[in-house]
Image 1 (tube, one colour):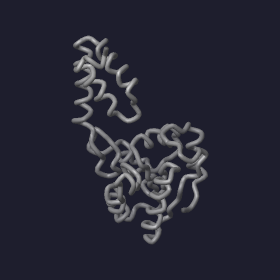
Image 2 (tube, rainbow, N blue to C red; image 1 turned 30 degrees about the horizontal axis):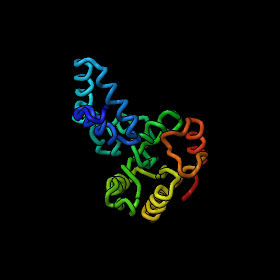
Image 3 (cartoon, rainbow, N blue to C red; image 1 turned 90 degrees about the horizontal axis):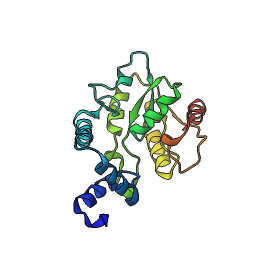
Image 4 (cartoon, helix red, strand yellow; image 1 turned 60 degrees about the horizontal axis):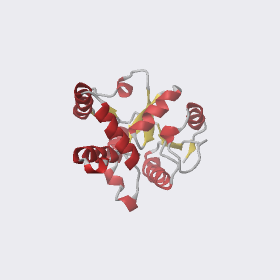
Length: 199
């Protein structure tokens, strides 16, 4: 019956566009919105718009922030000589939970994937090279997922950065190939950071 209610169907379709949300989950979410009061639904919609308006990319590391510069880049106690390159802002959150990494980050916003039309120029690699040009960075830790695309991105970055005299390392993974870093537990990530190797 739900399929015949156009506005409900439209709402479910919007939820289904979210990453990792299937048709059934999207319909459950749509019904959850229906269960909200008009005031709660208004607050929900306002929170979405507020996030879209206020959150932008940090001009230094390309992570998401609602400040001029993200808190990690603004932190004077962070080791600015070590940059951990990740594919996604969600990985930064996972890495920070470990509370052992004291360097800074650079977010690529994807990985090289020619099959999906993602070429190096579509990633935030130019911004990384600009940071390296400042001369403060000594080591780049490539922390892309252990997938074919993640490995290809790591190799591409290593070939690009090693001639610049930088130490380029790769995380030592305690997680299986094909998995996502954002779902790894703190101990696994800590071991991966501690056991990183030269690329």
